Amino acid sequence: MRVAYHSVLPEAVRTLRQLELVVEQTGLEPQLLELVRMRASQLNGCGYCLDMHAKDARARGEEERRLHVLAAWRDAPFYGDRERAALAWCEALTLLPTGGAPDEVYDELAAQFDERELTALTFAIVAINAWNRLAVGFQSPIGEYVSPHTRAEQESGDAGRASRPAA
Image (cartoon, rainbow, N blue to C red):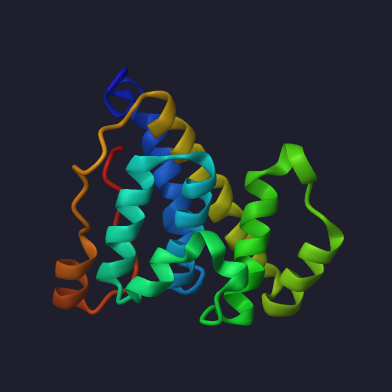
C-alpha cells in the first residue's frame, strides 16, 4: 500500500463510511447495492473493491452466476428491471466524462425507483467511486478483506452493513 490513508486521515474515512451507512438505512436492497458497487469497481479496475463486494454479495446470498456475468449484465436474462436501471445509472455516472447522464438512462431509473431511492442509489455510486479511487490510487492489497455479513447477519438478522473495513 502506498499510503495507509485510513490512518493518515481517519476523519475522512469515517465521513465516507457514514455516507454509506445513511444509504444503507434508506431501504435499498443490499444485494442491489453490492451489484452496483461491483459494477463500478469493474469499470474502475479496483481489485480490492471487487474482492470485497464479491465476498459481501455472496455473504448476502447473491448467486455466483450473477456475479460472474455482471460485466455483461445487458445480455444476461437474470437481472430484473430494477437492477438493470440501477446498473445503467451506475455506468453512466462512473463513466461520466464519456457519456454524461443521458435522459433515457435517468428516465428508466425514475420508472423503477422513487426519488428517495434514486437519490440514495446515486450517493451509493458516488461513495463506491470514491472508495475505488482511494484503493486504486493507494494500491490497497487485494484479498485481505473478510466480509462481516455472514456472521453478523446470522447473529442479528440485520441485513445492513455496520461499517466498511478500511481499504
